[in-house]
Length: 296
Figure 1 (cartoon, rainbow, N blue to C red):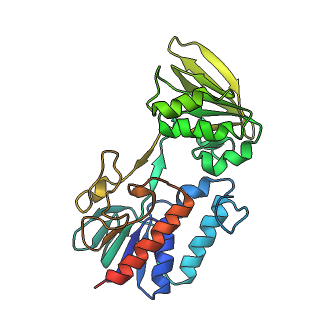
Figure 2: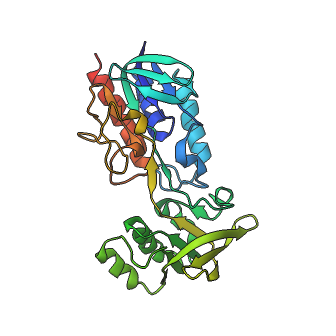
Figure 3: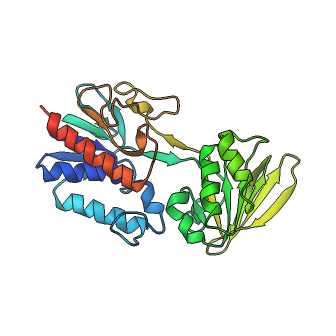
């Protein structure tokens, strides 16, 4: 019997475990892949308060070791099911807890083209707020057609020399007000009815090849590419104990409580306005604190 089982070893989950162990609770952290979540892929983190600059890998490693040193048990097993009576079934074992914190995060949607993974952190980013600073007076591209893509283009337009905004359709899905702002920015170049089909570069991204609806190809020399085609959580296995919105994110009553008593939610896996490292660790600390307070 564990006091709390934390599902997910990203920043939200590890922060939950940190707070729980400091309260002397018996904690098990379950992770399907590797610790750290998406932040591991960040070349540099420079928007975390109190840390001037750190690699995403080093940040995750430090947090992981901190939690391990406090005595949290961490196992790398794939969770298959969670029950209302706080039983967690994995591909290898079954565990029982008094409370559960779900902190499985979400994944950025990929272009799913050759070399994409190779250029992550070397020209490809999924977060303009995180990495835009590195492209001062450089040439970048944003791929997407929703509000996130429009916001990324606007944000980067104040940093980069030129911003190509590439969308596969004729019209954007984002709000008209945002689109009007984009069109008023002289250094944002809109390219419609086009998709990215190839990525080129040696040690880092140097060129993107796009193709329009008539199969005409064009090569753009860029220093960076920001992919803003959405995120997708993996919450279907929890649907018996939580409510999901239309995009698959977990609904909460107040940002932390699910519909099932004793099951708490933290990080990017839940409905929220801002998905950043700072909000993930905030969620983790709140979820742990509420679990400690309400635990039977």
